[in-house]
Image 1 (cartoon, helix red, strand yellow):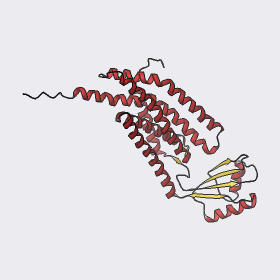
Image 2 (cartoon, rainbow, N blue to C red; image 1 turned 90 degrees about the vertical axis):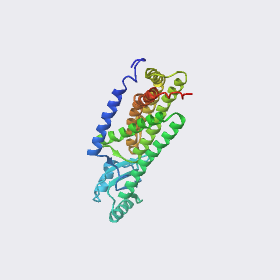
Image 3 (cartoon, helix red, strand yellow; image 1 turned 60 degrees about the vertical axis):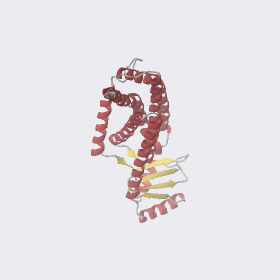
Image 4 (cartoon, rainbow, N blue to C red; image 1 turned 135 degrees about the vertical axis):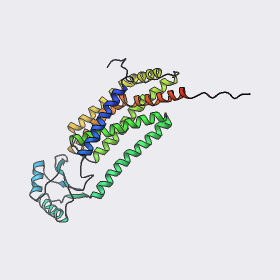
Length: 303
């Protein structure tokens, strides 16, 4: 991409790409939905503390001997002496009693069992949605106060675009949605808005030194501002991606979905900051310029 690349001129291409991805995401969500973890559906978690190193196969066999089929097994602890086992559906009191007796005899300590009922799962899902909406409203208020309403609207549109893309990709790839996934969404919300605000701040600074009366001049300022912040945006996203990849490779299984969501969100966050937010603002600002030109001039009163 050359230094003279015209971001504004090709805005419709970016809008079409985002629109197609959004429609595809909506279709997948309506047809196959999300693969919800037990944080958002009814389920149980069993945490085992052993006095020896465990393996996934060993833990699964232990539960199968009790007539239970785990949904997932995640090992933890310095020597993999802990196991976090998830089940779809709430374990009965009889099943929990069998677990306590079995692992008390085997490892000298009963497991801890926590359950999530369907009601609690729905509340967690609602609270997650409310958290994103509150963050969006807060960002709109701050950016509108700090800059202007058109920048606030553009920034939040790009932000919601990024959040939705993470959800859509998780639906397509059938990756489980859990609480760390929500943490990743909120992390990307903060990252995306920060990157967008840097570009908007440069646009505002450049606007101070120019008399903008035409769409051509407005496009020139937007392009110049993106180019002036492009290096910073790319370097920032690459640095964070390196950290996210390290988490994905070397991190525990319990944060794997968080790392995947972070990588997806970082990619779309960089895309929306460069190709979507500023172009949306240009469209809104251009309409303001047209309205000013079209506004009739009132005749002077006769004496």
